[in-house]
Length: 372
Ligand SMILES: [Zn+2]
Image (cartoon, rainbow, N blue to C red; front, side, top):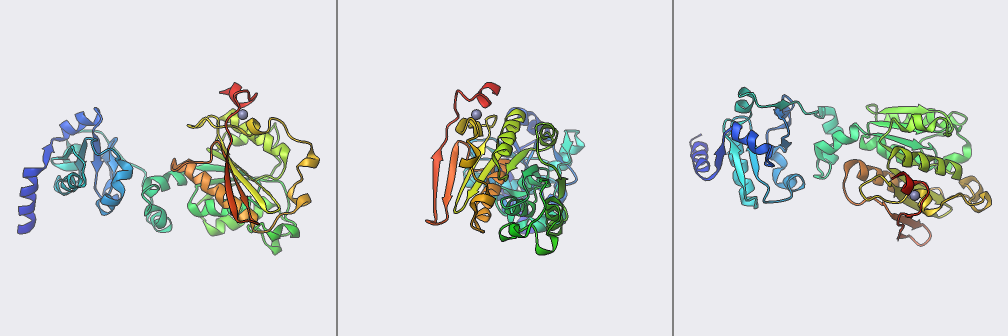
């Protein structure tokens, strides 16, 4: 204790301490209030508007939360001791304007400054999604976002299988499966959500069973229907993001048009024999990218656009393409990286090559440019 006290005395001389009142005032003027207490402490309450970062991963994760080293930071802990150590550490890391809140959260709450109870992950979720929590770009906050996200998947077949599997694994809280087909034996060459014993069942029922066995804590909504102009609005209204894993052009246009109307991000993918394509269509998004009609204003004649059943597809291809689509969906939900907005990624399995084409929005697009 002697050593600790001596160290604290030294820190009190070198670190600027401010009162909760000053911290509250500065918070409203752009100072970041950084709560460095542990999760179980934060779960009981934390200053309203604070950024939370437990000490354990401070050095590894702080830059993703506070990227500008000139940002004024007021560090708060329970009583004002740990925050001295953290303030000192942040100064050493290069943050130029760091102070410590005297009396910590106890003083903050006692003096009546606003407190919130942030949603926290359960111990189960912390265990299940531990590898996400270890990534600074995802972390506790990102996992919360995924758990509260709602994705609608059009098609529970070839692309829908890896998509739904990985999104369920990642902890996307609600998956809506839209499909009215039954399982056929020929589907099992690639549609890994289903199995031999379920031939003849609705794909949506089989998919929901598989997914809930895999991750019982997500919600799977079964939309056992074929999308049409009459039902699509009501369904899409309920979701944050749409993924099109359908295999026919009328559905593709219908889905695109509804996504533009509801300003929803649309992750698109298609497969043909040994080739796949992936993109993100989101005219209302931050990049103001194209919609599907910017590329193809109207459907080509059906003989030029054969379906999987007619053209065939190599069994693993939907796995590659669907997994890339799921990755795009996670990037959008977590607001990280560069989604494939305005770009078409193509994959050729025979040459093991990827290429990216730029696909700008068409300023003349009847659908998305008019609507924006
Ligand atoms: Zn468009």
